[in-house]
Length: 494
Image (cartoon, rainbow, N blue to C red; front, top):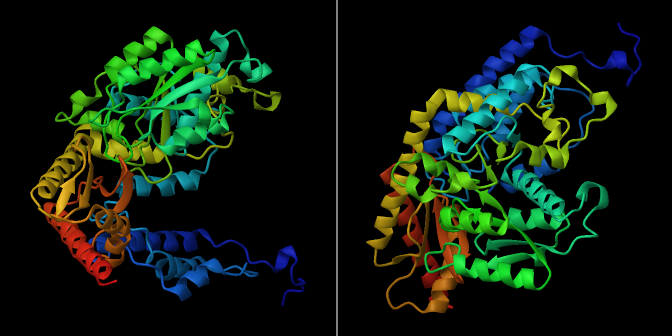
């Protein structure tokens, strides 16, 4: 009998043996495979049972450990039955993809290695250099050595890119921003449309520029950035003593998936010495589809591009990417090498931690490598082309339905539409469409989200899953019509 006292190191059970892990790992593979196989036959999403939710929220800190087999059982019975829903082929919400199987497997291997991908001479560092180059090649963006870094997502990638833009603007104005800060500079002004993702405003605020210095530029009837309005805004700000430095264009807007006209915007930016940043979070990969590739002409002229492999490529979350035209702009913004991080093996490109905010960085590149390598350029292109074709088909179905209204042309794989039966009062239409996404979600057969576009409540269906079929589109529209009819009747009775 052990004489170890409670709470002493000797009283705590040792980690499981290698055989315990091997058995649990095999069981985990079966659990995950069964979960993925069953997804199409289960509800897309359902609210959690209140008791099950409370059990997760109020779980006490355990005093004693549990064996791996017991933990796995809890995961299988308490966590995996309550998914977000984004693995299902009828999940059309936000921009959340189903996980690529190769990426799921690679995630486990990366976790087993558990390196810090900040720098050094180990596989993950070199693999990240390679996959960042692959991403740039896929979307046709120029890639100088070191001209990119994987991030947690486009929100972080946007912060990195806009920080580089801010530092370049300060340098051109004769100020060392890293040493002196913003105090000696006139207000730095950026330009974006109202359809630009909120991460751009967050980045501007976080970088100390102030949201009032992110000017909202008008869009034309097609939803694209209006070049004349942009030129006028830049001239006004220069005349007022402000310092224009940034234009944000979109490779797929949040609400409708609209792609801005990159060529004329790039011309204006070159003329005015403005940094052109492209928000390509989800939509930049649409450049691979021959049917819509023409929309992306000029995207390669941008100074920076932020995009998410964890969206249209299906790389398991998290994985974003920042690409820059000039490596030194990114490295010059973030490089700081204290003595304890000096490393002769780093090579001339240095550590990844010199290109962004993270010092300890997860091994993101393996799941990107596995996802791209498994499908190849041809497979990825086919998947994306299928999604855009299905989106166009959904747009046709909406236009053919007298109870529905298509609010914008389908340019990528987002379909913006709303329920609008003939003769319906505009106030009632807006009220029903505001409630409609939640009503559809609760029914469990399809999942769609809503937004406001040009002042009107709408549904936005985003197609990212190549396993989606035309039947799934029909189910979505059936659910929209049925839920809308119930909401309308309920309001009419009041």
